Image 1 (cartoon, rainbow, N blue to C red):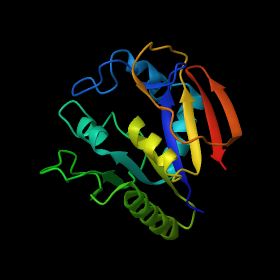
Image 2: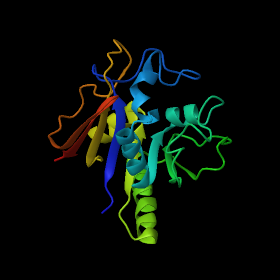
Image 3: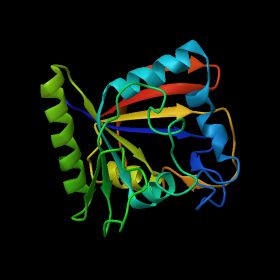
Image 4: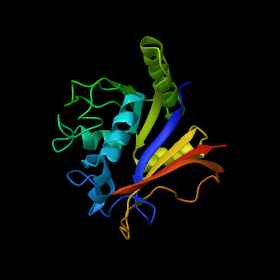
Length: 204
């Protein structure tokens, strides 16, 4: 069964970027420490990246995050979603208007202009089609940014919340939780690795 999973790295003080994120500084000042685990050579951390990528039938992101990853200092063959892994999932971007051009033409991009619920539905359709082709269940992964994941949580569109809790206090940055809709969660797993604690929750 295809699940809608919000998957994001977060600091101990609840931030998903450091201060002053923007073009050329997408993670904000100090925010790269949130993702140390994803680039580690630790075998368990590599396994988490590998298995998450393998289960990604489609990846959903917001326009601001798209502009960062598709910008001049964004993703390349060595840095990106599952860049070191085999296979690339399709990407769905929720946006008010599609970009005039795309730098990362080697990736499969779909731009949805009719709102977040329609973007989630489009991503689910892509993931379910990939699941049928491969004969195994694949998920929709909401990779961010924080505002998109917060909106998806408030709208009841998220089924699973996967947090990678980095051992860093940023002091200021982009908070993931901003006082929106209350949620009841059930912890399904907790796995401590050298650079993060990986927490998996099911939303009731």
